[in-house]
Amino acid sequence: MDDDGGGDGDDDDLTMIIQALVDELEWEIAQVDPKKTIQMGSFHINPDSSQSFVEVSYARSEAHLTKLLEQVCEQMKEYGEQADSTTHRKNYIRVVSQDKRTNELDMEGIQIDGDVRASLKFACESIVEEYEDELIEFFS
Image (cartoon, rainbow, N blue to C red; front, side, top):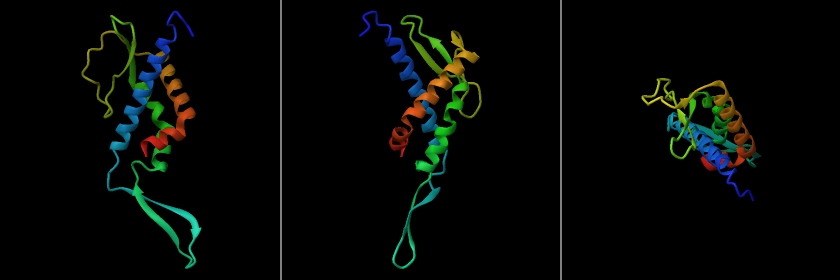
């Protein structure tokens, strides 16, 4: 255990990255027409030579979630980093809205550069790679 508290910032960073990842996935899922469905079935052939299929919502289907997880980390380029002036904790803020308009926020103190974006994207990809099955289960 580290007595100097050096690991706390890493935990905060991870929490903020996970929050950004969840926000992005929830937004993408919400963009799908709720009436859109996908057929899910088994490869099992019934005695009458038919297959059993079930219609499920596409938005939270495994196929759609897998597709989203393959591309969601690209959205990290829309984020900047801001440090709280009192606590010095980092906060990741979306600086471009999902509909690609600049957010109406005070940009003072928000760092937007390639290093921040690259580290966010890398961390996001690492989380998705390690927890893909859990994320699909959670969002389905």
